[in-house]
Image 1 (tube, one colour):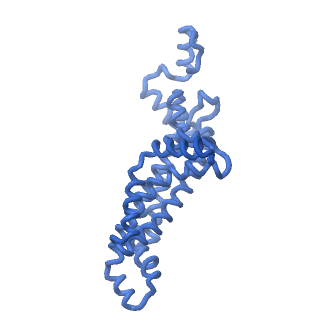
Image 2 (spheres, rainbow, N blue to C red; image 1 turned 180 degrees about the vertical axis):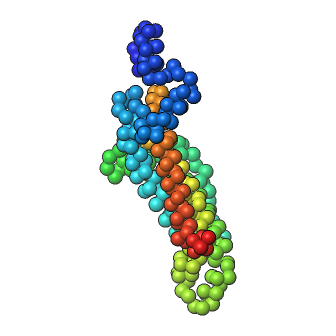
Image 3 (cartoon, one colour; image 1 turned 135 degrees about the horizontal axis):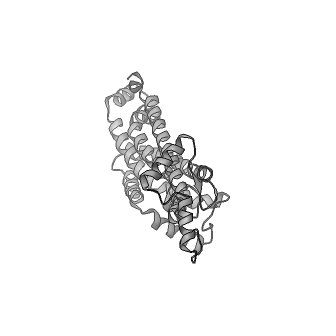
Length: 270
C-alpha cells in the first residue's frame, strides 16, 4: 500500500523495520502504551501527520451529526410517545406503534441507498454525498434519526403508560391539576429514566462512528476515517480513533449518570 509494487525485498524490509512492524505484537503494544503516557498516539502513514491531529479533525464532524440526530430523535419520541400513551390502543397509538416498530427495524444501509435513489437521483432535490450547507445534512441526519426515534417512541410510550396509571398521577388529577401539567410535568419526569438509558445507548452508537451512514454519504467523520484507515492499514490512526471514541462514550455515560441524579433526587442522596 505504501511502496511501489515492484519495490525490492530490501526496501520492504527497511520500511517494516523503520515503522516497527517486524517486532512481535506484544512489543508493538508495549511501545504504543509507553508512547500513550506521553500523549503520543503515533504518526499517520497515509497523511504523514500525527494520528491524533487526524482524528481530532474528524471527531467534531461526527459529534455534530450525532448531537443533531439525537436531539431530534429524543424530542420527537417524547412528544409522539406521550401522545400515544395518553390514549392507549387509540388510532394515534396504533399508527405510532406500527411506524415506530418499522423505523426501529429498518436497516440503515438500505434506507440510505433508497433515499439517495429517490431524493438525489430521481428527484434531484438533495446532493448524493459530501459535507457542506444545510442540504448536505438532511439525508445523513434523517437516516441516523430513524432507528433511535423508533426505539425511543416505544420506550417513552411504555414508561408513560406506567406513569399515568400510578397513584401520584391519580392524586394530581384529584387535586384538579391541569391535564397538560399531569402529563408533561408529573408523569413525564418519572418516565424519563429508562428513556435516558436507551437514549444514551443510541447516542453512544452514533458517536461510535455511524460508519455505514458516513461511508455511504461520504461524510468525513470518525466512522469513515476509521474504515479508511483499516483498509489502508494506517494502524496509528485506527488506534487513535478507537481511543478517542472510547473517551467520548465514557463521557456520554457520565452525562447519563448526571441526568439520572437531576431527575431522581433519591439517586443524589445515595
